[in-house]
Length: 255
Image (tube, rainbow, N blue to C red; front, side):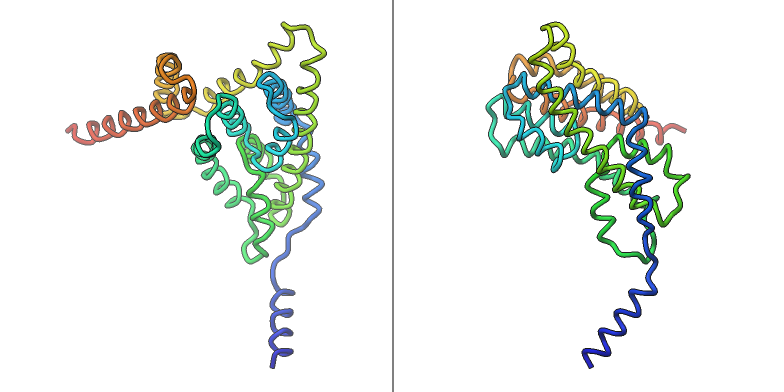
């Protein structure tokens, strides 16, 4: 009876659609494009920032591999450097990671092969962040459906490997550069974030959140410098959401 059941399972597995893992190499090649180069520059800045904040390089590399979202990594380093508890640092990182959920859903909806095994999707989900989402929007339509999840995994692996090298390079280059150049490298990451915020803003609520966060940031820094980044983001985003909802309700009430 057990043997018959095993044969039925094996037969069912043979009939399942299968991913084409040639897409893995195809995805790795896509890492060597303009978006990948821009991302490498941002992680050079992250490596310099890590050194400036006297954060261990091993910890930064571990974040590249396991956290894999530069805004969350910067927030984590920043909160720990300010002497906050690990619990608060994890809370701040979680708040920055919420924005990645829609990206994961969109990319996997576009990539998954119905009926195929699910574990490649779980692996691919780990690599999905802002840059990979943008690259998926740009290039995935040209990838055959059976190759898409392997393509995401290959692209993610190549990007992650390159960013680990960029982090290490930024960490050590800072010590060898003249002070002005080292300072420029350190501030490359915050500048990249600001440009990414502007690029990602689509609605009035997005622009309101950016503006309110910028206005709230300086006074919050004077009052609570340990949690200024977290509070500016939470307060600014919450106010922008409330204003947007009120404006939407007002618009519906108009004749």
